[in-house]
Each structure stands twice: as C-alpha cells, then as structure tokens.
Length: 239
Image 1 (cartoon, rainbow, N blue to C red):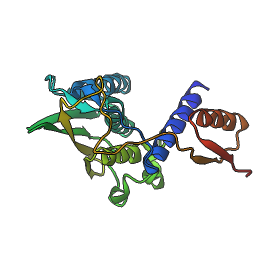
Image 2 (image 1 turned 180 degrees about the vertical axis):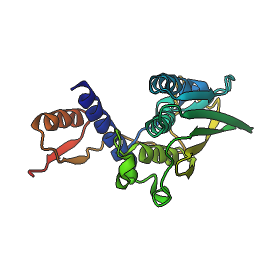
Image 3 (image 1 turned 90 degrees about the horizontal axis):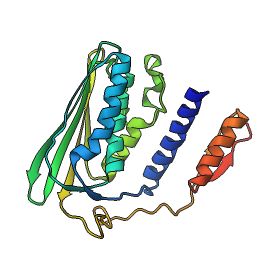
Image 4 (image 1 turned 60 degrees about the horizontal axis):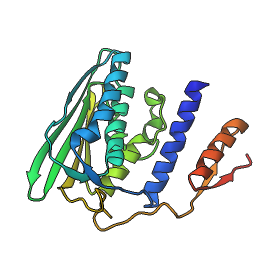
C-alpha cells in the first residue's frame, strides 16, 4: 500500500508538472543561490539510492561561491530526474556519475551538467523521441517503475529556462545526458527574488481541466482530491 501510494503521488505530481509545462503555466521563481545549493539535495538522495541498489556513484559539483539567479526547485528537478532515470536503468554493480562544469561570462555563468551511467542504454529507434512522454513504454525491457514523464519534464523545464539537453547512448553500454543552462550572476532584487525569467512571467491561476481514467474508486478519489487542491477541474471517464 505504501509503495502504491508513493507511485500514485508521484504520478499526480508529474502529471501536474507536465500539464503546467505544456500550458506555459509553470512558475519560475529565481533567487540567489549556487550550483551546489541546487545539486546537493538530488545528489544526496541519488547516493543513498545507489548504495541501496549496489551501484557505484561519483559526483563532481563545483563548491565555489559563485552566486547565481536561479530557481533551485525547478532546476533541482532536472538534476533529480536525470539521476533517478539513471538509477532506474542501471543494474547492481553498475556505475553512475554526475559532473557540473562552469564557464564564466560577463554577467553570467554557463553550467554544463552531465549525468552518465553504464546501464541498459536506450534503443536506437527510441532515442530520437526520448523526450516524448512514455517513449520507453514500447520497449518491454524498460517498462519499470516510473511515471514515464520524467524525461519529458526535464526537457520541458530546460526549454523553459532557455537551455539545451543532449543525450548519447549505446544499447547495453549506458547513457549520458548533458544539460546546459545559463544563469545571470548576482542579479537578484526584491529581497532575493527576481520578478521574471527572460521577461516572461508565468501564472498558476488559470484553471485547467484534467480527464481521469481510473477503474479503482479509491485511487480515483485520491487523485481527484489532490488535483482539485492544486486548482484543476477534474473530469471523470465513465468507462
């Protein structure tokens, strides 16, 4: 029950995220932080989960004090989901690494974050559509625990932040994701909060509709309650 509840909660959270990304209602709240502030939480969780699964884990995150203007929560989702994806498709005895490098520019910093594993790799026919929701569902060996939305969410947030996402993979040898993001340095206002990113402000006040198709009445009620609390109008499919 505990596992099912967690999976259901994760599915709801990811559904809300992908809906906000697709409708351009995902709010970005920049604040003063560092790349280590963004990465430390996801890296800590990944190291713990790798230890539990018997996977070797290495991290190389700059410990410098370069202060940037970024949304640590949304940027942290990128890091966390890439690491979770690597852990999901890497067998015990495998290796996962994360590395962040920085390039200083006038008034800004470009970060290149790379997550690499030596897991299953991605089938060549799936690779071009890897950021599409449920892209891996067509490959039976990849139908494991997960919502099928994580990489779509990663790409959506990266695009929203004006960055790029690249992937290299070899079937049976592993996968490498590289995300490149540019952040302004020390450009915070209003007590540490920026008013907008790239001149765009996103609002969550627009009420969106979500259709639920669920045979289990208890699951239906839980999902409906959580979505309505997040401001969504819920429609139920009869069968």
